[in-house]
Amino acid sequence: MKNYVVFLFQLIVWSGYTVVEWLSVDDKLLFKILMFLIFSYLAIYVGNSILKSNKKTILITGISLFFYGAVQILLKIVMPYS
Image (cartoon, rainbow, N blue to C red; front, side):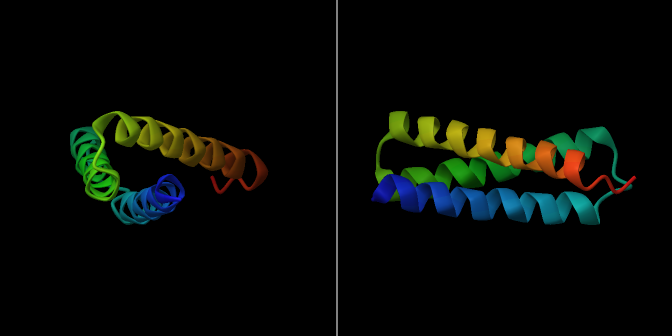
């Protein structure tokens, strides 16, 4: 059950990243990379504080990031905004 809770919290973190990335459309690539690293750290921190296991945290973070990326790609295919 803890794994599922961490997965959901991390999806909330990735959704926050999407909102912040959308608001900072004019930023340079370096700042977007730094912002991604900060949100990645936040997702790992949230996962590790709940699970207390580095191995499970990294695994669930990778899975949640994969699902986040897949949803983003599917949304760009289904609803292109540019």
